[in-house]
Image (cartoon, rainbow, N blue to C red; front, side, top):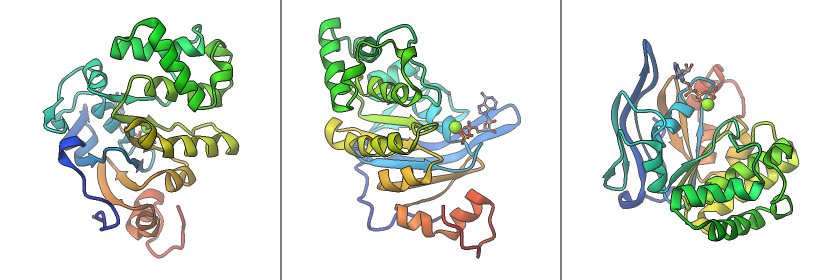
Length: 259
Ligand SMILES: Nc1ncnc2c1ncn2[C@@H]1O[C@H](COP(=O)(O)OP(=O)(O)OP(=O)(O)O)[C@@H](O)[C@H]1O
Ligand SMILES: [Mg+2]
């Protein structure tokens, strides 16, 4: 396996979110196969791999939406294996979904405030103040009173991200947030994601098929193929890896393909 080089800072075990020998089986299918990984606090980690590689399933495990068949999920020294998603959220592990999952009929600000009320128990007034601050930071304050379903796709994605941030996450897991976005929205999203660790003291796991987003936004990248983690490295290391190109694109090892 391509391992992290000395360009990546060592992980502080006390604060990391980790999987230890995690398996997920659906009947005969092994979706996640003996995966051991650690997410760095306060940095952006990419997770890439071909369709069906097990990325979303791994995120489901890391957020309590999928119970692993084997292995453990640890937040620092705390074993969260088998706990429900609400407990993961209470511990600061939040996520977005491939489909936005906003409350369609609610206003944008109420969608975002709902996370602060539901996860952190803020009063409605404080939650709305908090939601407004986040929407402002994301250049979305102008749509705070719009109904979620009335927004274009790009803004809905952004509101989904704002809602996850409103729950005061320490780790935020984003499943294909750039899907369906045009170039301008993509560039804005990259800039937001890059600034999340310093603004919110939060680590980010970013699943994306858009390699330009991954390469610009992430300080390190994990690569999955057929349920296994096959590589970890900096963007430069991953883009130069023949093994990753082969697994990701099914290309011949010596083909000059850039991902
Ligand atoms: N609930 C489920 N029941 C049965 N099989 C599932 C279930 N969820 C996922 N799978 C299967 O597990 C494998 C991994 O799926 P997963 O969605 O994690 O892949 P992915 O890497 O996120 O793919 P994509 O890039 O297409 O989103 C796939 O073969 C998928 O069909
Ligand atoms: Mg997926």
